Length: 92
Image (cartoon, rainbow, N blue to C red):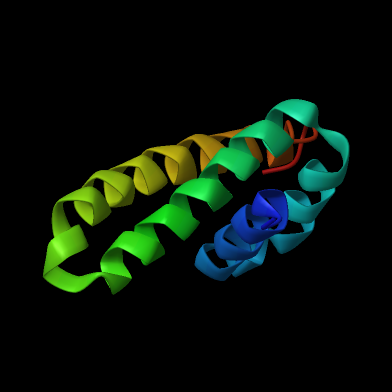
């Protein structure tokens, strides 16, 4: 059985390497992030599988490409919210 959490985290880090620390930290400690990341990993795996089928899998690959993008956006919004820090008063 594939480890979809690891696959999702790995793919997310590839796409946003500057957020690696936050992604890995969330993947270890946040159940909601873990669930979304698992879904992302599963969608990426399905996308690649359908893509490998060539023309026969083209329509399903397109569907999963969109699912992957939607999940990636959701995950990156989660990462951005986690890393957002209020500026210290008096500092620009």
